[in-house]
Amino acid sequence: MLALQGDFREHVAVLRSLGADVITVRCPEEVATISGLVIPGGESSVMDKLARSFGVADALKERIAGGLPVYGTCAGLIMLADRIVDGIRGQQSFGGLDVAVRRNAFGAQTESFEADLDVPVLGEPPMHAVFIRAPVVAELGAKATALATLEDGTVVAVEQGDLIGTSFHPEMTADYRFHQYFLDKVAARSSSL
Amino acid sequence: MSESTTHEFGSNRVKRGLAEMLKGGVIMDVVTAEQARIAEDAGAVAVMALERVPADIRSQGGVARMSDPDLIEAIIAEVSIPVMAKARIGHFVEAQVLQALNVDYIDESEVLSPADYVNHIDKWDFTVPFVCGATNLGEALRRINEGAAMIRSKGEAGTGDVSEATKHIRKIKSEIAALSSMSKDELYVAAKELQAPYDLVVEVAETGKLPVVLFTAGGVATPADAAMMMQLGADGVFVGSGIFKSGNPEKRAAAVVKATTFYDDPSVIAEVSRGLGEAMVGINVADVPAPHRLAERGW
Image (cartoon, rainbow over all chains, first blue to last red; front, side):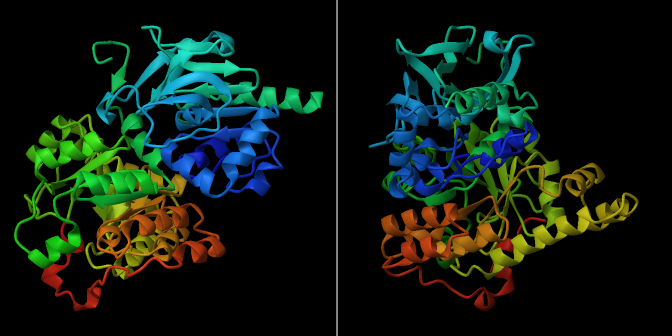
């Protein structure tokens, strides 16, 4: 669990309730020990700066290139995107997902919302999704697959191999299917090694 | 998106949720777009747009009000992190104006001169979320009952003296701990004594925490101050006058951000505390006469 800034405690609680063995990650030494990573919601520009100044960014880029399963929510989706639209000056990401993600795509906080969302890969019922100053996938690259879209076609959940990103926050509801979906990927990858 | 009927805006979860995303971060007071840029570049998780930092409000005196809309809009245009702005306690029209300006959070703040000495703003009426100050648990729960989606302990703003911030966060935390150990029948009396709604008191007793995010504020001036607030159980830190009233705002701002993330790692705090230049001069809270103490505004 990346714990530089944001709502990582909520994610930790969800992952533990699903039986996962969770540690918080703030430095490169910790990155070396993990078999999967969740990047929480928060402020992506802050996570980027902290990750770079403490050497976590380089260590993570290497692990992601080596196939580390990662799930990012909101700011976490931004950190996983190969390209950022509307970032702050000089903002970087870890990358991995062949997408361009637009930061804060809906506008000010008064435009934040909740909605029910069909996620075919998770089946029924629809997921109740919470969008908070949320990013969206502005451009889906050839290697990435959309997992969910809003009614206007905007992509808000995406997958590429063992990397998953959602614009919204399943950790804020009681529906943990995305976390389970991710843990299944981690388990499958660990047993194949 | 606002034309859609399936999207719910301004819900409790969405309002409180933004504060959840700010956790582990530093919110900085800024009075110009240039300062907002410096704050964002240094790693602020949000900025508080205002005309005068609390230290200047304190030294210049007079009635302190909501900032000029031009200033707030210039700051919103300059940065992409969330922008907060202050309304006077009870001044619901200032809050309406701030919502119309599209700020991301409104601080109903004792740092400004109160507009109503009886009522706070009915915050349920708004789509935009509110943060409010509190010196104790009862005050925090009364604000939450009025619709606050985030609480900050008050401290004594504009002093650079962290002692009041320490007192308030310790007080809130210890009152929460006391509730957690009470039996159910004792909670009725606890609610009466806290002067807080019974349902919220029961919720705090059961969960062992406030139902909203708790930041701390008022007098935080150094990386060690910020880390101490985090170790005392704050979810994050507001730094008001402490950054832009110091010798090297860029460096100090970045140092406070790092110390807030690595609040439990003294070697990191030591490293970032080196060579920051002069901290804000500050005044001891004990030297501020009681009528001029901002924390006593609001009830």
